Length: 289
Image (cartoon, rainbow, N blue to C red; front, side, top):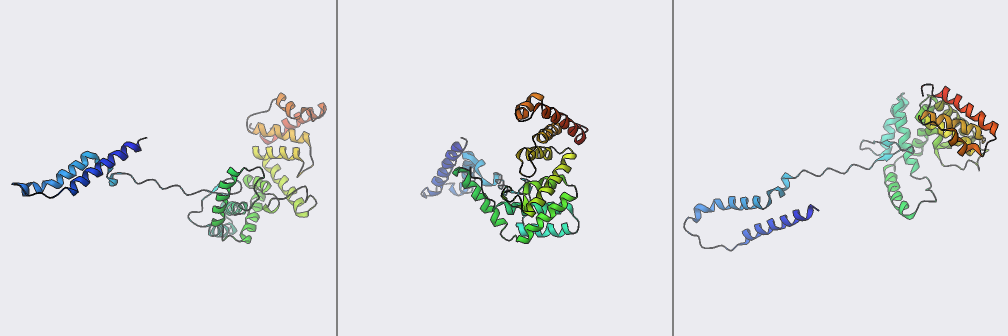
């Protein structure tokens, strides 16, 4: 609402100055020469009286809009520092090959964000969601235009190396990426050698991270045992990991909550055994919780 009074004041000031500038010349009167030098000062004074605060030199320059953020597939931001994705990955990969683990993770995140721009969109997206999403994906594709397939593949190798080294973030990312970093129908390719190898690695990484009280890893293991896609379905194990995951969050589940979720799907003896297994798992994974 402040812009309307400002606009009116600006218009009045401009009109006043225009009237002074366009006024017809008149015959000089006695003392006119002496007063002539003061005329500009009077006009400047009039302008100041009408609103010298409108002088653009007195206004602060508008803050530049922050550059759009680039995100890896894991949702973490990546700062390219003014480079495009290919140049950023090239620089980080060179450092990673020399043993820089942080640079290896940076290279992976950038590569994963580029790969994600071509992932299929969920079927449930509405038209209102699709349009801005496609605009953002087009922006990402332009940033990633020079990224090579070799750089994408190396990013996944860096991720596996980091997971092998015990990086918990990388261990969780390896699971989220899926086989080869691409969306895969796990049920349709259940017998595929690469898929079976990925399942074994992903479960191993999640268990390692969970053993160090990583709440996300424990929660993902609970979901995995419930869904039965990467490991045989086991509701008792799902319940045990759910207990440990919430203990890691310091939000322990009550027996009532557990019965609401698992009670109808487990026999009473299996439920009691899962309760005990969950308590033991939480104690061993999160001894300080």
